[in-house]
Image (cartoon, rainbow, N blue to C red):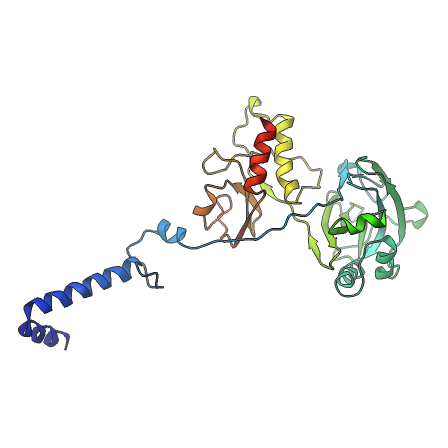
Length: 332
């Protein structure tokens, strides 16, 4: 049918025939090469060009100041029988309230109540939400910028040496940090922080660590604080050990995003340079893998994480261009 049509068209006018064939050729070429932006099979592109054409959404971030800081001091020595030492680093006067043997179900019900019922901005509010489903409570007043070491221990008269086998109905320790001054609660978006801590015992001997940290906002939301994974340095020579200033730079990147490693496990030597170009400073976090490994120039070229090869669904910057310029001026 097509052959008959072409022969008839040629007999009618050879010039018109050539024009029609040429137009069809141009349109077909444009479709194959994607000139018109239509969703058609792109058979003449290589895989890298096809990969780069997929857009990765950049997450819109809002920077907030977290007034609370909590970490475990010497986690290797912590246990249910000997207790645990916590180090606080708060921007304002705060109260640290520790709940031993807190009910797992009641903790998550309390988080839901913060969203839908009442705000957990004081220790009394959390106690009301928990319905006293815990074994022992301790409370301490923390002075601002003091980096106090607080020793917490379950009383010996409870005669508890473990919390049973997994899955457990109780967390060993839940630590609540709240602002001591009521006026400060009007200044900060984050009004309290709930830390769920695992402490080894006779039955469950995994190392002591912070399992979850939840930041509770005055508007009723709460966010799960996550660790970021920085790229490890490949150079293991003694001269490559980072100076304290370089370590502070790596930590400051995490702190700017409100995400900082709270576990006191042996840290891997990290690099602040982009893993691709080894020139620009790391500034982008890839989600959902949470690898912080790319600079501003390289992030646009990757649909998969260059470290774990997981597909990138979203990404966000640790600091804006204005903040980077401000940091450069400070170093000068």
